[in-house]
Image (cartoon, rainbow, N blue to C red; front, side, top):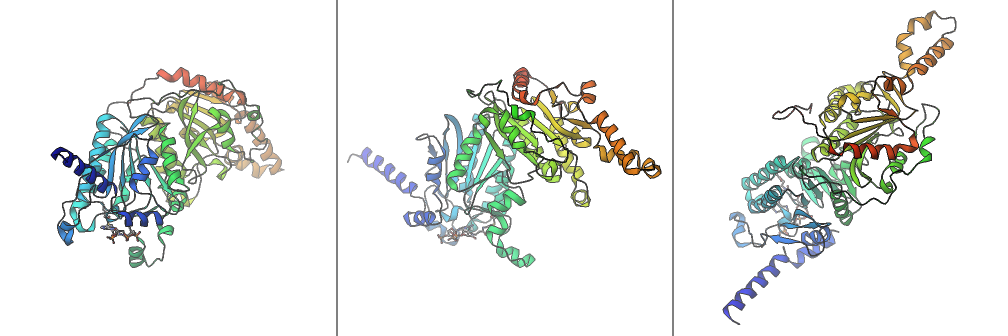
Length: 517
Ligand code: HXC
């Protein structure tokens, strides 16, 4: 072997060593846990053969606890870049086979390097998390590493899309990086997120909980809303990332690519002409409306299991990615409450930050009344959604299907919140409140004095409905741009989006607003 050949062989050997991470035994254990290794995950996530790995030969610099004798090439995270559907992305995947994927100073530097590259190039960054938290042997240097990552998450927010998949443990302060990113995906049975684990919980509060009960995928999808998506397993989590990115531009200065559309834009949906029940007390399924108007009925729902009284997610209309926000009459009659408002607000802000037009479908009877909501700060949470819509400068198309009452009418992208095209179905009722509530306030005294109070109330309610339970009062003032036939909704919304494609609106210059957090 020549000297050069020897050197090349050394490189090949070192690469092979790095690719083994924590070694064959640790890899086998990872597989036994039902999890893939970091490199297997990256290979599955990215377009075949597109991954370019960086910093394969990085090792930690810690000398505590005999660490100076244990160096593993790559040090607990695999980083680099590649493509998804041909579009550039940066990726880091924590390698649980190396010190349990725990974060060292050098590992943080590797992650920061790809985040910096992603910012320079204006491309999404994807983190695959599977880690025991701060590398205990490194103490404060590991904490500093986390802080470096968080700072970058914050500066990248609203500039490049940031996506986190939790594919193992994610505990302690480590949870804040995913929380700062735009979307979090957890997989059933393998993902856990909590600030303090079951042992600390037991010591401090006396509560007995398992990891799953404390921070499993179902907890964070249904109860806390921390995760936006739940996958059946690790494979599906990676598929969701690919799908999600297809709706999102590379950065805040770009538009999402328009996809070819095979679904006729003038497709009439006759079932929409009969979907609204005669009785205002009866519900229908908003998913049917969404499915009927978007391209090929394809809808990527975000937060599917959280605050189900509002529906949010991505779809395409004539190939153009849109963010859908819709009240769901089937759940709590589609009322807005604290959780629904927060869920909607964050989504509206994401779409606005990344130039994704908003299509809002309204059937909302109001805000949920009661001490539960008031004590919980529904005033502030409702204001978040209001703020998000009012601040948004992307094209905004609103369709009112049925109820649109009071404060909730305003919040759901009304004309005065700079709604660009506000349509209403003939079945819509746009008013200060419903007939029962209005008559209760206006005619309480009259009802007491009436010979037949029930008949009196009914007469007044009918009178109120005739006057207000329709879209024409709002249309009379131009608050509604047109009353449209339900079956024609797809066509009208697409035409509006086409017309709005060149929309340019700027908010007043400021450092940043003060959204009621
Ligand atoms: C160093 C760690 C580690 C850590 C795990 N390992 N966590 N090494 N620092 N934080 C090592 C283990 O010693 C073990 O090494 C290997 O990783 C695999 O771990 P196991 O325990 O065998 O795996 P498992 O049974 O699946 O349990 C996984 C686990 C558990 C639940 C994550 O390892 C665990 O509880 N780890 C500690 C979690 C923790 O308290 N982290 C610090 C949180 S404080 P060997 O050599 O035996 O294979 C924190 C502050 C961050 O993160 C603040 C940021 C702002």
